[in-house]
Image (cartoon, rainbow, N blue to C red):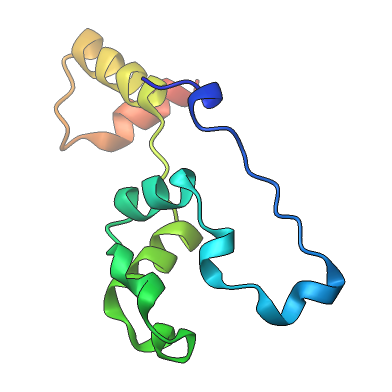
Length: 103
């Protein structure tokens, strides 16, 4: 696994006098490309007109993934599995497993 030092955060510095000349590529870093890969967003989105982004299915789906992350609690899953194994409870009888876990 790569460390944060491998991909340092990039501070964006824009002089107020240069605002008219700033381009999107001035805001893109290696971290941006890693994020796009993780969200299955093709990099060519950056070459498209920003006005078309809301109609780009890949970008819209990537934005949904960021706005509604799927949270997984591995420790909780392992705990419930252990409780089920200990009690011999099948996954169908979830109410017993939940009541045992909450007591």
